[in-house]
Image 1 (cartoon, helix red, strand yellow):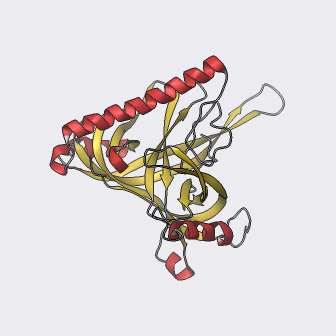
Image 2 (image 1 turned 180 degrees about the vertical axis):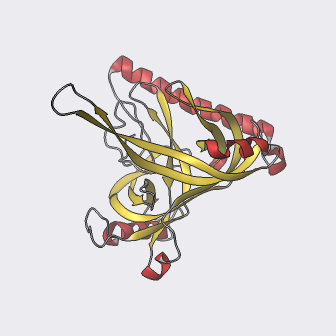
Image 3 (image 1 turned 90 degrees about the vertical axis):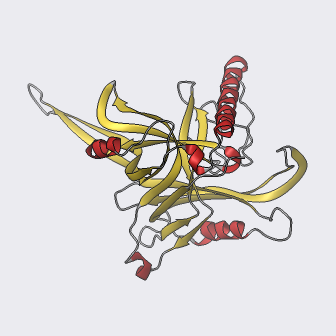
Length: 318
C-alpha cells in the first residue's frame, strides 16, 4: 500500500462563522456497509478570515465514541467545545476569537457542477482548533498556508477566457489514506515562473511545494460615459480562489521516495473508477429525475442535483 505523502494546511484567522450539528449516524462494518445500529457524530465547519481578507472554510467530523468502544473520542469533545464556546463575528461582532486549526490537511471533493459535469474541488479538513491568547497573537500571523509532497501530474499555462495569464498551473497528486489520490491544482505566479522552470521540476517527478491559500473577493468598477445625464456605473465582484506556490524543491523520481510505480498506477485507476461512478450517478439522475444515494452520514435525502456530499462538511455546496 502506498504511504501517505506530506499534506499540511496551516490556517490562523478571525472566526467569522461556525456551523455544527450533532446527529445519529449509521454504524458501518469494515467494508463500509451499514450494520443497522446508530451512533452519535458531530460535523460542520468554521470560516476563518486571514490578514489578506481571505476566508477559508475548515471542515470537521468526528464520531462520539472511539473505534474500540473504550470511551468518548477526544476529537468529538474538542469539536463540541468549538460549537458551544468559540465566539464568531456573526454572533459577537466585537469579541470574535482568533483561531488556529490543528492537524489540517487538503482533501478532494468531487461533485456535479451546474453544467452537469463532474467537478473537483480541494477542501481543508482539520481535527481540532485552538483559540489564541493576546500574547500568542503578537507572534502569530493571520495566514493560510500549505506544505505538500507528491507526484507532478501536469504542468501547463494558466488560461483565462482563452488567454494565457503568464502564470503556470500545476496539478500535484498528493497521496492520502490507503493510497487515495488527492489532486491539488496549484499556481506558480508569473513573477517566479522563470526560477521555477529552471529548478528542475517535471511531469512525473516527485516534488515538495509550499505556498499560500488565497480566497479573496475583488471588486472592479467600470464607468461608461453617457451623452447626457449620469454615467453608467457597473460594479462586478469576483472571487479569487487559488493555492499559490511560494517555493519548492524537485525531489527526483517518485520511486526514490517509496512510491511504487505499479501501486501508483493502481491508485490512479481507483480514482478514475470513483469519477466514473459519479458520472454514472449523474446520468442516472438525468434519466430518472431522482437523486443518487451518498455515503455522507449528515446528508438528508441524498445529494441534490448540483452536488455530491462532502464528508467533512455535510452542509457545504460548491
